[in-house]
Length: 91
Image (cartoon, rainbow, N blue to C red; front, top):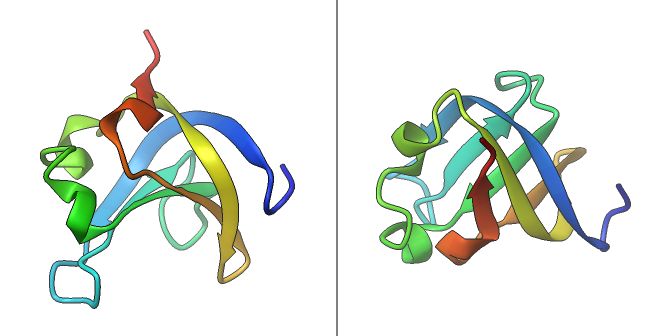
């Protein structure tokens, strides 16, 4: 993975946090290891959250793939999901 590249990342959601009182009301879906040692994060901003329902519950314990541009926050890679179609549940 290279920051700035567009890619698909797959992993199991092991922890999540909906920061409703934070600026932008972000939802963080952490892959493979729980926060603060997450391998990768899917970020859903509050303005897009209604498209996903309650993603912290819907994807809990599931292996999912997300497609988008890789960015970095505090040294950890993440992809911002703006549409439900960017996240796919693996069976």
